[in-house]
Length: 363
Image (cartoon, rainbow, N blue to C red; front, side):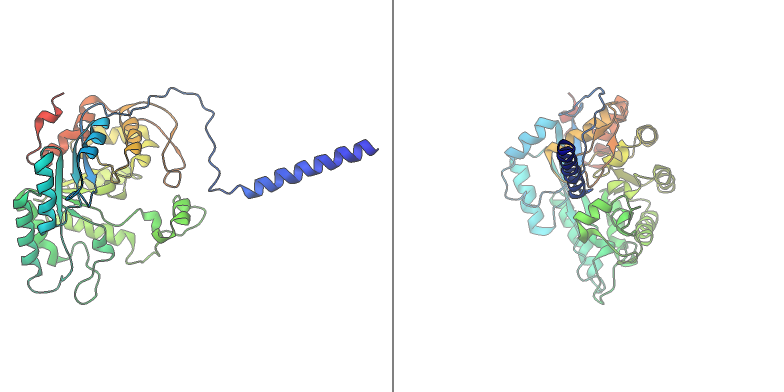
């Protein structure tokens, strides 16, 4: 009897311990390692030299570029496009540093200052500055998501992306033959209810500043619609829609938009996890629109590039993304044909960016 009581006591303690541990393990902490055994083809270096169309380096005017070049070479990045060029003297200083050291390895995009929209001379001054920036060496124009979200005119009103007062900027880009890379809004889930059905729940919980109300500062569909209106108003200007326009999770809809707007290209920065969970669908999309998709990463984190290479180049199955809060699901490789891969990696960007050194890709 005494033995049974002791045994029962140990069993209860064990159950209490297990129960306590289970309660302490939150969803955020739960991150099991897959027991699935499948072939792994880790890709540390891209199969072909590539152009990263979407990078940000604010201090390129003064930094020693040699370390950056070494990092680029390790992954086979031939050309980096720095979208954070600014304008005026700051942009000129950045280009001077590049041209004195590695003139064929970096491309810089200019930016527009939207402060003062509503003043009679704002558009003329903005166009004049853009012309000067391009003359100094800028190869494109980057528009941040603040347009449509935060930028306001002199009367305190939100500046819509398709605001007619901005039309001279987009028209000038078409006239100059430079592309406009634009980031509009954010993933739609940021505007949706933060509940158990929201796929971005973990991201919004760990980064609450990303959450918006359904109308802050306008409905998601409205902001995206403004972007599309602007594309359609300027058919002679080539636009690179960053993050696949936030439709990487709905490639059927994105295909419709590609047909509606032949002047729209798309970059894959920050949406590789969406593509990697639908390998057959995504592969078909890449093949169909192979002339209008560009490689881009967004944040420069060298350890994250191999996941992009693996999704694009291999037929690997069920491998993890590098940020659980972005993608808690497994991914699969698209195994893109070589010619499609070359277009995504560099050929499409070369068509959009004048003056790229072709010798970097003859390897």
